[in-house]
Image 1 (cartoon, rainbow, N blue to C red):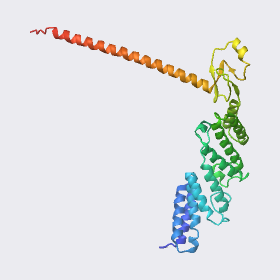
Image 2 (cartoon, helix red, strand yellow):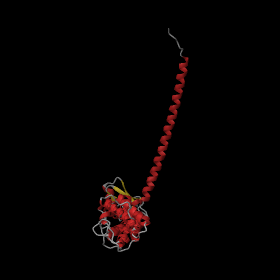
Image 3 (spheres, rainbow, N blue to C red):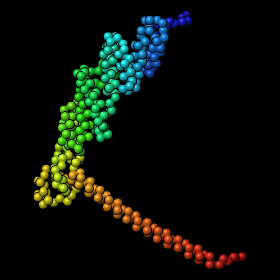
Image 4 (cartoon, helix red, strand yellow):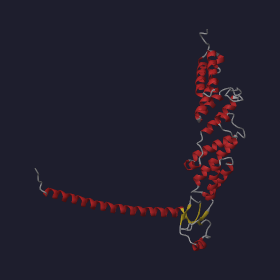
Length: 326
């Protein structure tokens, strides 16, 4: 009967338990056992066990990162991995044991990828230049990695060559920049959207359709029906308003400028539209206030009339004699 276990035995027991939990998919349990192994190795006087403390800590941080999937967690795991001997092979549960140096690099890349906000065409308007710069920075970093894939691609579910991801991220950055320039510099926005398309060859159809739609509308130029000034950028610097257009109007003015008349609507620049909108809004508000004032006046007269009638009823009731019957 063994009454006492050496630090080496305790350490190996915790490592074995950690691997067993990992193989069963219990990553939380694996993290706990690796941390216990790290504590044993950190305080032991056994030099062989003590020198393995860094490895135990790495495994704990690595599986913690796989649980949390945050840039901070991956960065901590990368830092711990980078402190190990670069050629030291690590057992992380995949077919090939990667060298610590290679895995540290991939964990740092994972940290960068997971730091990025999800790109959604519906959210482009809420993304500022700092987000565009972040996409560009990470994209350029991945381009430097070439066509290789992450060592832990199956674990992370990232099954693409790194330069392909990098190109797409740079495309996203240009889409964000273009969106922010649409109103002030539509010509430059068109250039950026065009550049973005070349980077987005492997993007989803939704993203490519979004950019193509932006290009088609921003590239359009016409004249404002109201002020006759030339204007570029449909839905940005001009829009279409419904109007009564007969054959005469269409034949006489339809060719005056490209896209001036479209499907029974006329092109109106942003300035003229907002002027008309603000004026109509002000008029509507004025008439609304007038209507409310009239309603309040009628209500006041009705309330006065009701009070007068109530007063008369009370006086009449006071004059009616009260009789008692046996």
